[in-house]
Length: 422
Image 1: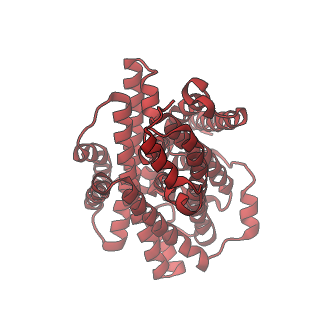
Image 2 (image 1 turned 90 degrees about the vertical axis):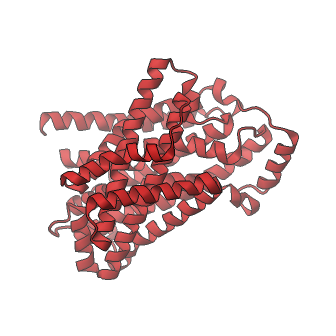
Image 3 (image 1 turned 180 degrees about the vertical axis):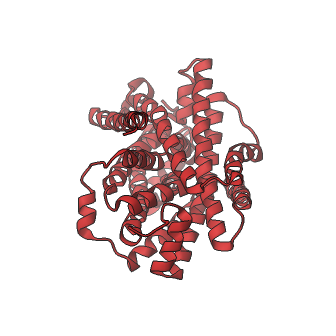
């Protein structure tokens, strides 16, 4: 349990959040919106457009379910940070041996690299669409700009960083929702798409990628640190209830926005791109959107993609630093970390490989990293020795365990179908 802070700190904390989720309590909102940016990154764009253009409304249910699951997971992550005053990596470090800790960190870094592949590649594609820049140059520019965004957090504080990222989320939402006003989806098709089902191996692959892009493992680690850093490591018990109430509003609002944007991408592809040739790539989908819906919508689409790449890659780099510091008690310079994680993406862009397919594959890699983040989170928040009086209710633990089971089962099915050639 976190320690009780000084009387002065407790009084200040109480004054800041006395009015709960309204009034002054609005100042408690923000951390979940930083995490939510990762749910609308370029990897989401690739998987959602591929799903909608190829299979219409078939996989709407995947995004709806993944958004609900992500909301539960993000709340538990923030709850852990608020109650314990530690990030998830910090909590795990004290319960792992050295070799286990290093192995766990390595898999988390692989996830971080896969994240950067999606986000940097997406930013490069957007710069190519908007300005005709070569993809490798666009990747480098995306990485450099992300450093500038991270410097906001480093020099101006977390609150300013949250505001920048929240503004970016609004721009992303506007960019991807604009097309629906021109090509509204079929209500019957959307309702039918809420019925869970698959249609062959390719739809399972897409579903795994959609889960990987929505229930993002690196922000499971990050959200606990965002909550810890925002509210302090010495908050008294009387304050925790207020913070948890505000966090429910924070997570709920962020997931509504992120989930709505994701579903809008799929609906746009299903309503405007179904049956259109060359929509299996983001560049092709952009061309089709511009041709069918007009240049204004095409520019809005590209701007949304660009901002999603810039914002989400800065959040991903931030998460990588939290993971390393929490598990290994090591920090490396921001520029060095940025270079390490962005290099694979730039190399891939330089090879001439199809960037959209790399985005989809990167989301599948993320999907395999989800259990390593979710299962320890569920276990830790279900332990009274960790959470004290704020331990999860039995129903919460059952639901969270169900989320873990669904993700693991989906990945096992994906491997089986792929190996069998079904």
